[in-house]
Amino acid sequence: MLGWMAWTWPTALLFVGIFTAIGVLVLLEVRYPGGQARNGVLGLTTTRGDRLFITLLGSAFIFFAWLGLMGPPLWWPLAISLGWGTFCFWKV
Image (tube, rainbow, N blue to C red; front, side, top):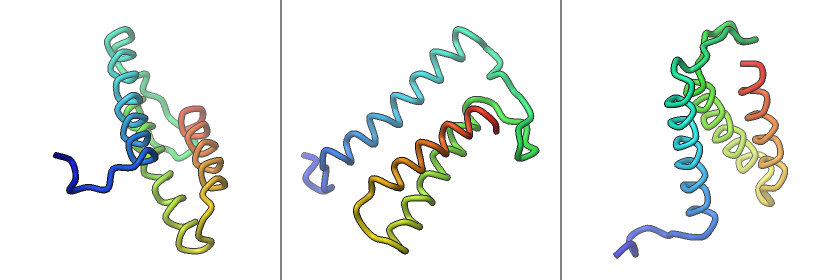
């Protein structure tokens, strides 16, 4: 049924991680409504969802740049992306 797409374990884990993050944000929004808007170092007023989007977009660019410039293995861009995500939720 799903043979049209090359589903691999890393691909499945990526989608599970994204949907889990969205689910956690939904639960946080139900428990603490309002999204905790704040001004960050980028000069933007962001909510939790905005920070998740900036994290995912930045991580994609980190991986694309790494693949274009360095190639595999992808452990270093993973570490950089985790650092980027921590920075986004802490300071942005």
